[in-house]
Length: 252
Image (cartoon, rainbow, N blue to C red; front, side, top):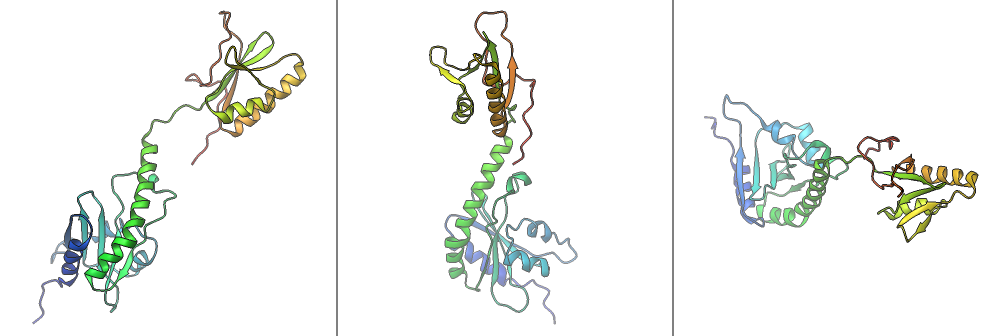
């Protein structure tokens, strides 16, 4: 008579493997209940692999698998190798608490095909799969942190007219300062500003245009401003909320 009890060899392998990995892991064996809903696609969609494991999952349906989880949230997916091959496939599961955009440009920590020996498999996972996973996870977390930061308004350099010269507050960024000094601005240490002399107006105009073009390449907008009624020239290195000259959008 056919025994309807699911084959637990994969579950046993995963349980032993969990006990051999560094840290404290739990192992959960997943097999669809008779007449129940098979939701393995939820797990296979999270497999963080674009190599051997992904190819096997694309070609062969998964009817049972195991998930190992460590206390820090690291998860590993374990399933049998397809066909009549002995052994198992092990891959990391991608974190589910970060936006999809955070994975852009991050190399997947591809999984492993291992023999049906949980002790040698634990060594392979420890020295091969987990280090790749940690590298990829760090990159994804860093991307997610950057995406979570409020998007700042584009930075602008404000050039203010003062007695025929153009004056710019000394920028904090060296590349911005270099773009200005390479195109005729000189540093006035007494006022802590950069000044473009108006002794030769044609040369001044050409220098201002060249500096503006270089700043645009850096993603920095330029605003020309006449001084306010107050005697000291009003300059700023960071834009006010509503820009007069918009910096072109630059995608990552």
